[in-house]
Image 1 (cartoon, rainbow, N blue to C red):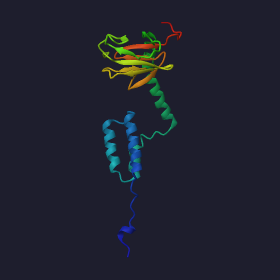
Image 2 (image 1 turned 180 degrees about the vertical axis):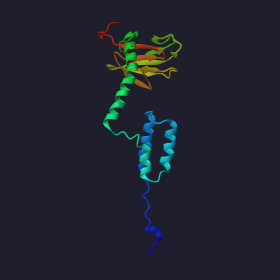
Image 3 (image 1 turned 45 degrees about the vertical axis):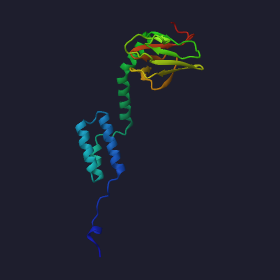
Image 4 (image 1 turned 90 degrees about the horizontal axis):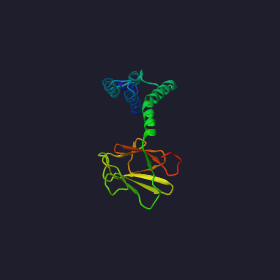
Length: 188
């Protein structure tokens, strides 16, 4: 006895991996600005209810860009759009006041608004105990002491401790310096 179920053929069920690939392509398309938010949401809904592979393929047909040319184009556009920021940092870097690294000693150099600090910075964006600079052999370590407005090295906020060196751009709140090591040969 043959049942009607065995005689009819159903398309294979879509795998989670197929859906995940399509959802990833849709997310990338939205992140690159190639899909509006509404279009992204609608296509996500359609991908979740799709029953056939052809339905999924139709959702990403205009977004699949596995070619080298499109990746190169995106990389070039990203580089060009970042150029003004790099130029501004380079221009400001040469004009920044220099902060001469102290002679290494047994105690760290405390930086902040408090008069008891080794380096006192009287600015409203600098905390009373903002940061400390410590020598470890030939390396310098900068540590933020839980300041309100943060400490940055080369434009990146310091979380915990980071090594610093001659030429680095260091900000305490909105006060920015360029580090200069003693005997580095740079004019002070």
